[in-house]
Image (tube, rainbow, N blue to C red; front, side, top):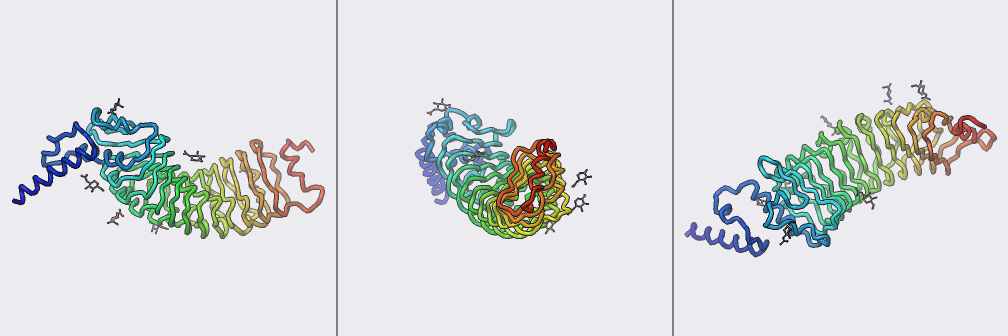
Length: 354
Ligand SMILES: *[C@@H]1O[C@H](CO)[C@@H](O)[C@H](O)[C@H]1NC(C)=O
Ligand SMILES: *[C@@H]1O[C@H](CO)[C@@H](O)[C@H](O)[C@H]1NC(C)=O
Ligand SMILES: *[C@@H]1O[C@H](CO)[C@@H](O)[C@H](O)[C@H]1NC(C)=O
Ligand SMILES: *[C@@H]1O[C@H](CO)[C@@H](O)[C@H](O)[C@H]1NC(C)=O
Ligand SMILES: *[C@@H]1O[C@H](CO)[C@@H](O)[C@H](O)[C@H]1NC(C)=O
Ligand SMILES: *[C@@H]1O[C@H](CO)[C@@H](O)[C@H](O)[C@H]1NC(C)=O
Ligand SMILES: *[C@@H]1O[C@H](CO)[C@@H](O)[C@H](O)[C@H]1NC(C)=O
């Protein structure tokens, strides 16, 4: 009785699968086998992923049909030996839909990129089952909800790019455990709370992009440990406190952008800005007082220097070594003394020709 019941259930399931996916080529022999083969799991996961896509004006998902093996479907790459999905890349294809929890079954997935579509709703928490995932790119979609706490299961992640979505909630502390991370971007979302000090433990981190959220709190001292950091942007949040001076010692920095916050304090006059490669340096629109540190004149790769909208005073240092500089913004401060020498720094910009 039990046996015939379960046969009955299998039969129903097959009917449902056939009508749901209208797959005439469904492998009935495969289903009859007691062990579900890995690549069947992958194919089912992909079909569930497809079933949640409700808008496909470029008709790219039509190639996901039973007349070709799923390893040849648009955007799908499989490993050669096992025919398991290792990459799923569907970028800038005008796809609309939500993310099926079945993606958690693609257990060989290394790269998952859906940048520039219109995927909405939350990131399914089943994502933690992707133990081999290295690259997760969901940039420029309409993903909402919080950063799934389950992401900590994906300990191989090197790149997490979820900028340009509608993420809410806080940046979870556990991200500091993803020790392989090189690239972390949640810019242009609606995250609040503070930057967790645990991020200072990401010793391979090269990019930390948190521009335009609603973050508050301070810049954690622990970030000075990120010696590989080359891109640091936290601009247009509500971050306060002072900049840990050791941050100015991050010698691999190329972009340093902390404008549009509530950062206070002075930049110590003997501050050694040891950023030989920096080409964009912005502290615009904060509440920084005191003088512009003379050591900025040593950052010879600078292209853009933004100090405007602070409470800086005193002289602008000589800028003669900055021969790559093409924009310097200083307005809305208290610079100079109302005297003749105030604009001397301009002469240093044009080979001391004054
Ligand atoms: C299945 O995909 C192939 C390859 O993209 C395509 O040529 C064919 O028209 C598709 N079949 C259907 C029924 O959409
Ligand atoms: C795949 O994922 C779904 C949803 O997370 C789950 O219900 C199902 O049991 C998983 N396993 C297989 C083998 O499809
Ligand atoms: C995301 O969208 C913004 C605004 O449209 C655009 O500037 C940016 O280049 C896009 N990023 C990616 C990776 O597509
Ligand atoms: C993912 O979430 C589930 C349910 O909340 C939990 O049981 C599981 O331990 C979590 N996994 C990780 C890696 O945090
Ligand atoms: C950083 O990692 C160390 C050990 O690896 C741990 O003891 C410490 O709590 C971590 N710091 C933060 C801020 O998470
Ligand atoms: C910056 O680096 C120099 C040289 O490594 C070191 O002497 C100095 O103490 C550092 N400054 C800070 C604030 O960490
Ligand atoms: C500029 O760099 C040189 C060479 O490293 C150093 O001797 C000098 O003190 C620096 N100047 C400032 C103002 O930091």
